[in-house]
Amino acid sequence: MLRVLFVFFILLASVCLGIYLQNDPGYVLIAVDKWTIETTLWVAMIALVLSFIALYCFTSIASWALHIPSSYRRWKADRIKRKARAKTRQGLIEFSEGYWNKAKSHLIKALPGTDTPLLNYLTAARAAQEMGDSKLRDDYLREAQQSMPEAKIAVELTQAQLQLANQQWEQALATLQHLHHLTPSHPYVLKLLMKLYKQVRDWPQLIALLPELKRNQVVTRIEYDHLKQYVYLQSMKDYLKHNQHEALEASFESRPHALLYDPEIIALYCSYLIGKEDYVLAETLLRRTLSKGFSEPLMSLYGQLNNHGAKLNFAESFLKEQPHSPILLLCLGKICEAKNLWGKAREYFENSISYGAIPDAYLALGHLLQLLNDQTNACEAYRKGLELAQSNHT
Image 1: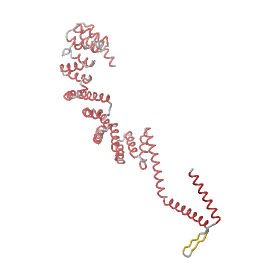
Image 2: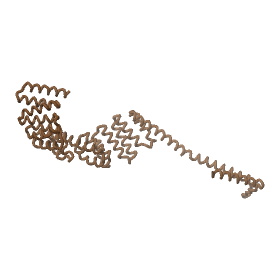
Image 3: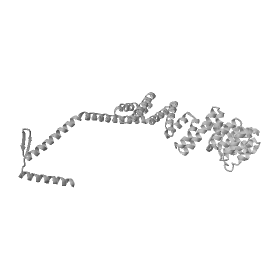
Image 4: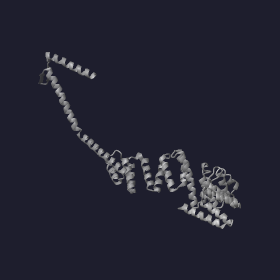
């Protein structure tokens, strides 16, 4: 609305000025030295306007001419950037489709004009990894770090990921330890370290890392509890496998409070104790752990104690809770046999077979029948146990 009013007043003023000048055209005299110019006001005003227009056109053309080189450079730079973006897009698409060599080529060719050199180098490094060229991969990672020094953590994390994927354990460990020194609380660095230690079965290092994993919430509470149990169990298995008995015992004694009565750990350690005929300690650990909760693997080990400390009344205390457990019944039969309770032992063995036939129950029954001079039934029990063992194996 204001613009319309402004135009209206301009036109009104122009009309008024025109009427006024028609009655009195005015007079303009310009004198310079010996030169004089005489004209009417109308002609002077028109000449002034035309001169202004001519001057404006001249300065505009001159300015445009002077800016031609910079405009050309700007146009050329924009053109290079557009081509670089197009090549980068093409390279990323090819990388996603699995055309590693083409992707690498397009991403590297886009580098002179791209505004994302870090992305290009990192993706090209991944493509080189997929091509099996570790040297070229490391070259691209080095160039990536030089292109953007502030992205050091991102580049080294990518390097660690690729080294892990390529099973370069020593190189990955060096990279991750350096990253851990730079950023001790970085969740992903800790997660990759956890993955590496599990792969190389470096259980002491992983045990030492557990508090940091928990403190920085790298894993959930449930995952943490499972990992802790897994790490201690696997470390003990490895020590047992390599006959590192002192390390095994030290690991068992240093287990955290949450694993004091873990059935798998107790079962493994008690198997070791039974193997070295330390029946007293084995019976104590088994009884203490079973009192916390019934476990068939532990009850099976308790049955292996036989006349080496196994207590019949303790084992029979679980019958009310687990009356149909074949493992419990087998255990009871073995203890009764060790105490020369032949009839009771046979009953337990036969009940064990009826509730869930297992080869060990047939073997135990056959052995008992052989002691009782019942050779026919003993051979039949052995035969059934052998057939069942073969069918389970196949």
